[in-house]
Length: 459
Image 1 (cartoon, rainbow, N blue to C red):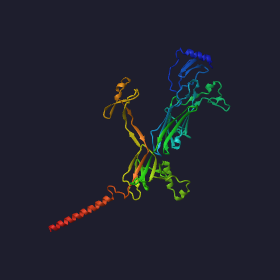
Image 2: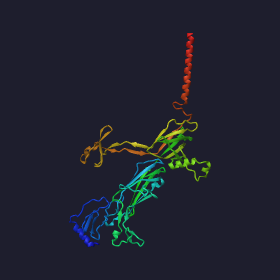
Image 3: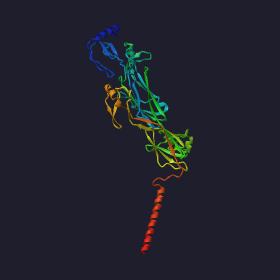
Image 4: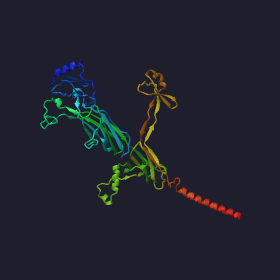
């Protein structure tokens, strides 16, 4: 039976000094069930307030939907182990945030029935998106084929609550058996069953291929169907190498060729004028498949794929889309005609590390309870020391703070000088061989001459 507002108020006042029939208990955000209760009036007190209910023969299994509030999108983060990558590399992102079943508090709380995760995939800088894990709490979210739910048109939509009652064609509420429901009030008819625990953490992990060079600013947006929304950005960068071929007078010089190796493997590039960008696996396959065709088949092809090569031609060449964490090796494979070729390779490094250092406190420095303080115990050796607000002023003159070690990246420019003349032989080359053979011949000749003369004297 329905309960008047006056009765609800009276029960709430009585409950303030009454002994609890059951509880207190702590919810994990899902369902709490109290069994074995005698018929009667009950007041249920939660962190959201109080609700009065009746348990009797007409309503033996009373139900309360408690709108406990947590932030609908709590501590949204998007992380990646990669801060830099090469075009064609696969990078991995992880998105995580705390969820809720309601948005708002108390009577104003709105039921959340859907979460949407959208990603711009860096506006075309990323492709081949593959979800490798999707969990709410410990529950894996998979499709009917047993595979993790994937992005569709840049988003993933998750049903967060299911309605307890549907509507028929006449707009009437019906139960699961199709029977028209008339006995429940509007609030009960429009109630939902939550799919996941309130406060559960959603974790999404996906991989992507870097398609373009530059700053890859990837934005994820999380929203609910009741208006909550929050975004988070994550940047990954690529770096470039400029090769400037010059002569002994530092004048530009054309006609040289180079290879750039990563992990002892020559990088394959797509060329646009004097700009070289690492080729993706798809570009490499398309070019190799096209190269296998006959001339007639190539002529019939709708469009020839981009040429893929390991040869960098310079003059001046810009190699873009490189991984700042890797060390590349640049080797000259052909010198301009009439000039010496380099006999050794050059390492290309984009990353620099600065060691931690210590700075003496300024005279006007103030005590900071969260700071770490150090003292110099011997040359270039520091030791953390305990400092209180009371001892700070007396110790300030001997205190240092630590400037943490840092990592920085920068594009590189590499001048390559060639001098006129034939290529100089390296140790063990043909020049040494000729010299050794000729020398050995001379030595043999000298020995024969010496023996002959000695014999002549004896005779």
